[in-house]
Image (tube, rainbow, N blue to C red; front, side):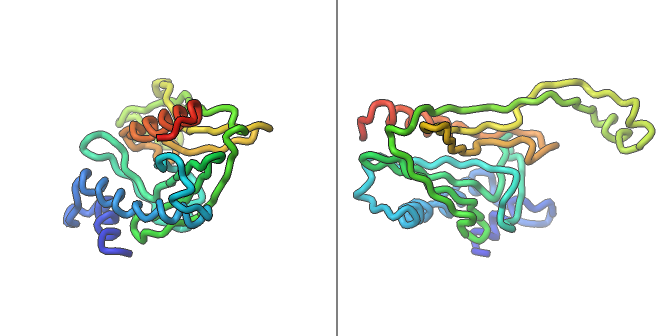
Length: 220
């Protein structure tokens, strides 16, 4: 655990006596911890900065499995946004002819990159870029209903209010032959019961930039 990793860990502590950093300080420490991933992505994909013809793009997200033993935590900040660890980091670099992707599960407590993977796609093989939301209908219970729902006999007679909600959101790259690469953006099933929302604004802005770059091939 690094010194900043300890601060990040304490941010999620439920102990009222634990000194905690603010939401903004948490965001700043996360970005600082993840900065070295840009160089690691180049190293793992055997690239040099001079090979890249466009700005490196990074997308943050999460998934419900395969965390390689990293400590899992979620918290809703004062701004209503959900903050979580570990973080799935997807870094995209663009060469003259290829889009090269590095992805890992990043543990900011230890600053280790886990479950690292890489992919390479020729631009001419990319047939679509899309975002996909998966929705469900679920019966939502009131606080009182939740109390009585724990009683086996009574729960049979409790009916909640059906509500539709988005379960998860993904960014998907599809290539010829229907091969797909998925980048997780949000997953409400992973944090069932937590009231809050995922801030995907940065991810969506990055996705728009990727679409524009691949469509025009006018690198800036």
